[in-house]
Length: 253
Image 1 (spheres, helix red, strand yellow):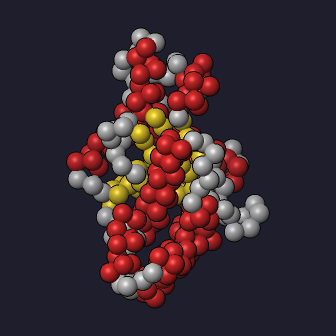
Image 2: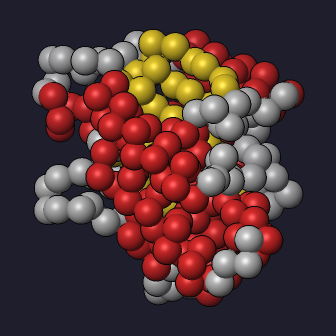
């Protein structure tokens, strides 16, 4: 059974704040086929060529849709993900604090983006172990949204991780970049990354007790108990980095 991951990073790996938000979905061929059929049916129903969250609500306004109508449409696409895709993942990291913490410990070459990608792949491996057992974990085919020079940087980043972490390299079957206009699974990754990034930034501004917005909460909720999405997610803010420092201080990136 092949497993295919579609990932998106909301913002850039090195934005002005140093904040990293990497999200993705993992599923088998069968799951992605069912997802694609349902997604394309919704695209045809609403005459939407693609979902891109930075443009979605503005596009809905141009159609004279109310916010309630727009949310109803988005809910349909979210349910297409929840009903068919095996598992979702999110890794958030205060990259600036992560780097500064290591520099203060005398290690100036640590790359927070490598850590974020490694954590994502470890979470995917653990999900496969739970689903199909430790002796049959398949290679994971990675797909990213194509974005010019950023795609080259992303490939170099993962190639560097494969050299430094042979145990991670053995998980990766291929690395592919594609236009999300033609790949609904990348649009699904964009929804997850956008909603998660906004929520985690709210936590940075307002505190950890901030509840997730309704759309993200629905996206994170499995349609039935123990069916559908399992949700290994990790937000490495300064507090979490300090708590795990004894384990993190020796990472070699």
